[in-house]
Length: 111
Length: 112
Image 1 (tube, rainbow over the protein chains, first blue to last red):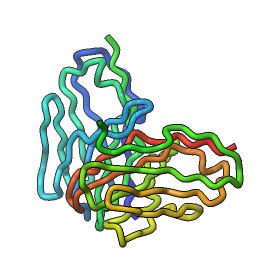
Image 2: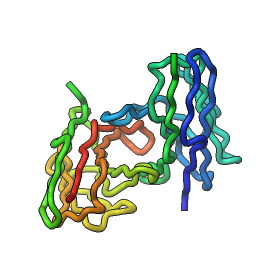
Image 3: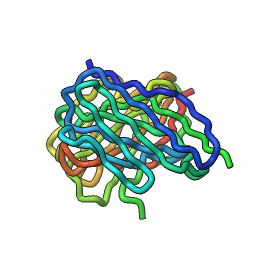
Image 4: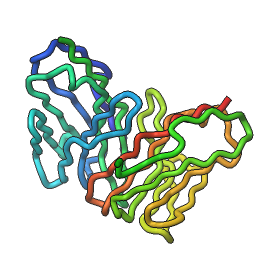
């Protein structure tokens, strides 16, 4: 059974810091991995999607990497800002479109 | 306007009541999903549908049923609500198995 773990569960950093969020999964047979952002009272917003054949994806200050063999993904946020404060979720896609989610990392960036 | 909408956004109900949560999308996607989110457990898949004639159980379907009324509409029903169904419910859509999933804003359901 696929399990997805995110460490740390919570993180508080000063504005401007570069930071790394970690996601690990137990079964390497995945189609892709997605990183989402969730703001309080709102739905999930997709940030990056990495196909199983890819090693990384970048969007602005965000960079996500994927190492299928070790069952790991990292989300790198450069020059963090208070507006980055949210919960970040990773999810791996198995067959038939099913997503298996981690429990998330709650990030707070303070001025 | 939002691409994926959910109604109601908040609902408080009593044990034993029948509840329906509705989801509509304007993205033209065939695939739709219902998830629930509980603190410390992440999101878990309840049901999913790949087209109007296709309904599949997810990992936690007991106590729930769904109806795909049209390509754009997918509703989730709790036939007899119980307190441990108190959670945040999300609807999502995707274009195909490799595409990004797009989520609605969620429905916060409380069962007393």
